[in-house]
Length: 506
Image 1 (spheres, one colour):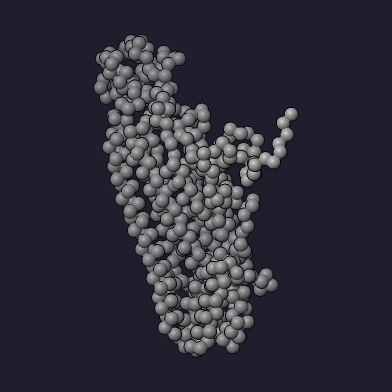
Image 2 (tube, one colour; image 1 turned 135 degrees about the vertical axis):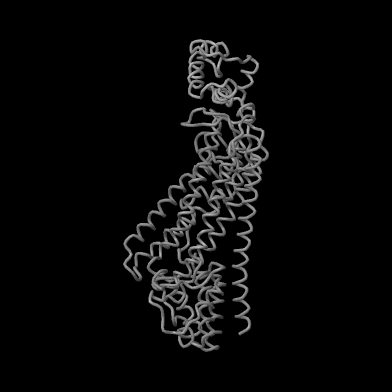
């Protein structure tokens, strides 16, 4: 019996000694989630946006001479102080003060006195405060998500370009169908994600409008300038109905979560495809160690936990979307307290989604494809039979339906093989009284996956020219999305820059 004395083994994880490279912290965070990682109070996620909107509101009140310059300067100084504390993680929320809005106002009153701080809430309600903060939050996260999607699309297009010549079995009903290429598969996912990016951009068209000034849902008698505050917050303009952003305090959130849900459905599909392709039964791809995890008992295991986490998150995010839709279904006009829960659903979904696009992009970049293995599978189970059918139909001028019966009988007489046997084909033709003139050399050549791809001329298919066109068009679309992203980020930066200049000039 062996006893261990003064062992140098230090346990960090229950697995990993067989790994070439262990996952990074962000991967553990992504897969472990709420199991071990703390979540800050949800209002703290909205704090930077509430402070931004409060500064703008203060300047708007000053511009309209609703408050005096000394009060405005004191309020802005206090808001700067709170902003610094929030950034350092040192702004503590007092639960007795209900929410971030009351906590900020209470801090200001304690710091600069109610005579000055008490003027900040003029011409606004917590209802339009939260509506503004939430829209600013979603707007930011929309850009963040589009940035992630862009990096993923770039990775897919790069990998597709590298794998243009690689053949791959195509499937229907989980059975071998027709040969395709790895590039064709990756371009399918790239196209899906490009649409996702466009879907997120639609949020800006629908909801990049300023609720500030809606107050409790019925406006205010103070002569506020909503165009001015909209400009400083980077909105297109104010909302045109004060009830809209207050009663529908679930719709902007649901629009974002709808786009997020569709994005994750596409991510989940890609994840499942890679999981299946990485199994020993397929062996098409090898997942990088740093995006897999081990087992607490089985020493050989390298599990696709990151990809499985994406599938779980896809379901979780959809559930949050349904929750938002339920909140919105019975909204009596005006403010209703149940809309408070829209905040939780929104932030929970965002936290689960964070970094998914970046991590999947890294998986794609590091993915190893076994081209010999994919070609081997692209020669199984009569997968090239459709190409042979089409060739017979085209070259022999036989009606499609007759040619299909011919090939079906040929496959029946070729049992035990992976391709249609030439003699079995002849037997079937004779049985159907068909005169088919084709050499065995031509017959066999038509049953190679490469020949199938070279004969595939339809736009959008896996043929070489089609893939080349799709790559070019996808790269063009990605450039357009990156341009849109750059413009919106510039808008954000400029609106914040104008705000800083105005504050500095006081």
